[in-house]
Length: 549
Image (tube, rainbow, N blue to C red):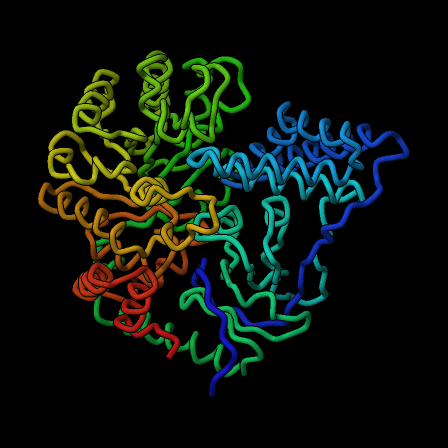
């Protein structure tokens, strides 16, 4: 039996079926904010928008908190506010002024390209949220249902998505967005399956029954429950078959780890069944400071994380500042393109003490924790940089030192790099962005940023092959590892560990428990020879027996 089927980019792995609740916030201009002048009302809306975003950021975990904080700073940006004031001075009412300024400012950023184009979507989100606050006391009225539902929208801002309750929202379907959009990143962290970039979502009405299949990247309209059972059952049967014949988990071929980005995550992530931490993002210690934290301050925070994973591995990434994570005490003036500028390990050229202090703090905290500490540097581009970082780690008595592979040049020199380091970890988000010269937040380029792109997988395969030859670990800590089918491919390409959110652990574990190394390598070969990301995904799903039909 066939149903109307809409296709997009799948996020997650579990099929969901349920009735639709549409979220279509009004685009019009309201009149909240008192009876003051248009400029006063516009300023009120911008202030309220920034305050609400800051409040949400304070109660959220990364990556949501980082995204929300960046948008709150945008709402307070003097250039944006000057544009709003200019519109009001030209005779526009408050709401029209905000919308016009946001559109104009976003278009200007989009035209600049690169890092600036990434910020265009943030400006549009901030403008839309400020407009809502002119007509209401809330940032938005998400659908409330007595029973769980599938949320369908044209798009969702980070402020919308971060407040979703996984117990009430079965799945998300949006017209806009891509695999690395804000909606995708936050939905994945919440463990809510989604299909984004789904052009047919506009045709789905309130109350319709839909089946959301993120593995196939499909949304089926008015399906039978039997189809949901069939799809879920096929995958479960396949997993059971894999457990019988020996799999990637039980044989120790792949280690599953968790990502950590804040102290308040520790109770959940430490309790998860994992081999430890595959990516400890240390930026949260440095944010919102006018000076760098001392060695003692850092050691105290790291010590909490290390102690929570006593006896297990912790892979700590050194400070990844710059680009979309600027720090006041590391500002070096304007850069034409911050995403390609002084970020990550490159900051050592102008502020060497920051990295030295962090490595000292790592060593001090690890001595008393009982964890197995591995340290890696982000944005390494050359073999020389890799060698220098490892040498610096050795001076600080850190035994396991590695690098992030986020720059294509490093992947191309993977064999030489392996001779210098103890391990590497693939950061698929940035590697994809730099390999395809495509802004991560630009919806029109979502297809290029799909982690199933064969060219991206070929770069991963180069690194995996070099790791096998050298007998050294190759981890993956980018968003790609959260896709169960892609996790199998990454294992086939040579990944020895995958690091994901705690919520993504169970489905990824089940997928890896369903196949052996030979099957994973066959899946990897099929993905590499495919003509497109969509073809690669479909070929692998069919090969593994996980295709919907």
